Image (cartoon, rainbow over the protein chains, first blue to last red):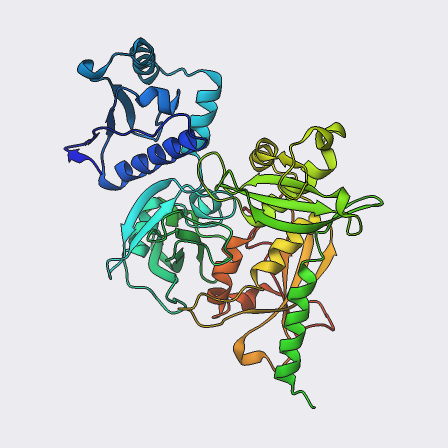
Length: 235
Length: 235
């Protein structure tokens, strides 16, 4: 899928035939997947080189956190002044913090979609376990606040272990024993992280287009208590 | 023919699954809308076509093309599409059907994509939608690779904000089920559909965590009631 060069993912001709009813949808989805790939491999810049790029994507641009979108036109292949004009516009948009109405709304929707990967962990058996943006029902938005575990560090520490009792082929349960130190008082709290090791959630509400991908972390909780100690999330 | 307790509980589970489809029939006052057909839109592989009618006159049929994915390429849960379609069918202008193109069977076809996407962006669910989603999740068969865990034996809407599911496990199919109280609204009073985290985590909670959520109530339809409202309090 392109070439990783340091922190830059170079993607040469990337073209979706315009005029097809699904062209924009496909184009957006490809861009979406490329941005996710960038996050996984640690790339900070997604560089797409295609003179017809902007006509296909419209004003869409990647606004994933930490990524810069840059459209570059190959001068030899440009014979369309519209494409050249759009390129200048796209570079200006990428460089500025402001976007026009629908583009900004599309970008916000794309970057806040439940499937966006926030960070990745691998368990002791090497299983790829993403934590996705999620929403009120699953993932980071669901559990990133009291009373659950909402520390990326704690979640990574838990998932970095072997799956525990309660795990099945498609559900993995991870736990981490964490200590809350208050002077000389120690309170042992066991945190639990539950992940869906499958391309769709167990209730079939959320699905990934790639059936080789994993949904990842669904929810977290602390055993024996309704609210995880706040100190747990300050580890 | 004599049925043992296990066999009878299986019949009860099938009844609960069957009745789920009646929970969210499309009705608008004295008007009834039933599903006449579900097909793939011939021109759009990313859209489904749902045909509604009044259950008596085929001439009253109307087909709606509904998107299967959101603008970011994520799947739209089927129950959400059904809820959106209810609004489309009831709020559409009267002349819309008259001007709509006809399919090969003479059924007027209306493109509901924009309105379904608008619903997904700002859902307006009703309590029956939430009840259906909560119960239907536990009425699904497990993945082939996973063992059977929880089975829906029944359900009851307790009030506008809470439902009680009656569930059992493979080990308790010859005994009364346990009850599980779940919220159908968020803290702001908006109806919320889907309890993915509960569905994923419940088999894990059953390993010991659920006991502290026992509710001190008597329900003749189950042996014990557990309340997960607090567990989901910040969802």
